[in-house]
Image (cartoon, rainbow, N blue to C red; front, top):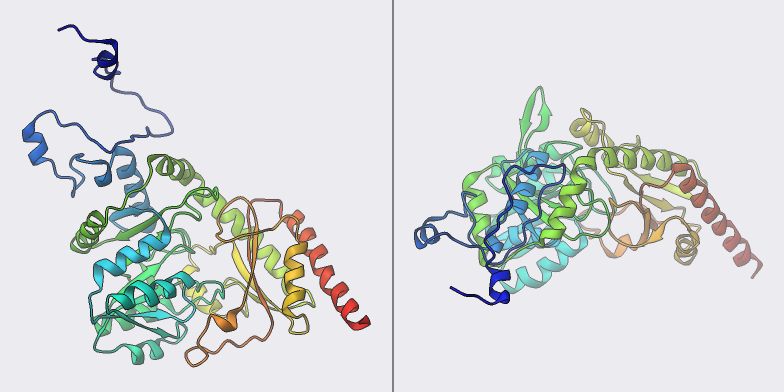
Length: 411
């Protein structure tokens, strides 16, 4: 059969030989996947990763990342989604039904509350807050319609480390599913499926979600999330919701995370060490009323961090500081603006240090977990810059606080 060059270019018979191996895995991009015959079309099983059927159901590249992430977090099964928030939404839409209720810690990631107020409320799913530092308060908050308890360790922005094992034990005793946002721990600070519970005992969460945007990607240029379990039936329930929602991730983004994973422990430890150095230094500065870093003595939840993370002695390279109340909000904003090595921006785990001020009073419910500090809070996310360069930058920005107070006094 004579064919035109256009057809021959598309249907060229050459196939490269098998056996190529290299440090970085191949990147397989596909929406359409070819089958050798109709029998294969009708028999392939994508659910158990026994074959390939369509790009949304997985490629060799995405299967590989899922398996590595499951190993990272101590799980057996993993799903990839377009962002950390997409992971939260997928878990909720899969496991909650009209009339159900989810309990969220008062210090939860802010967009989770927005999602609960929006889509969950529209679907007739309720939510309430609980004090993550008080297992008894969680026990009292669980009602007849409570189907899920959401956990964060450490808490978003305010960085309290909860009594994680005790919270999980409450969920187990009350027959309520518990899900952990494990972005802070990144699978490195502790194993969420083997949480120390004292005297050699351990407890496990049911599901973890992870914003791969942070440490697993490490470059500040990828949006992705994951959902990890150790329960095959639970994983399949989540997987079918994932399929019906049509969730997928780009192969080049998967490649970026696969490229970064081998260095995640090195980066996590380097940023951890730098963050502790800067946190201890800031704790000595007169302008700072409180440093919120779970690995530092005196910080909220420090003893809980020790019990869960003591074996690894790891913590994320992120912490917050509360400025002395004599420095008003505008002066603290000027401090943030004066920083030269820290950039103003959300997220963390990347190479560039970041700073963001927060209005915590507007984020917390004082009836659930009163916020004890009066000053303005600033979150610092430490990158990979030289720690002394960052300290010098913080010092020169702190000097602007004294100057602004002097000017205010002159007025």
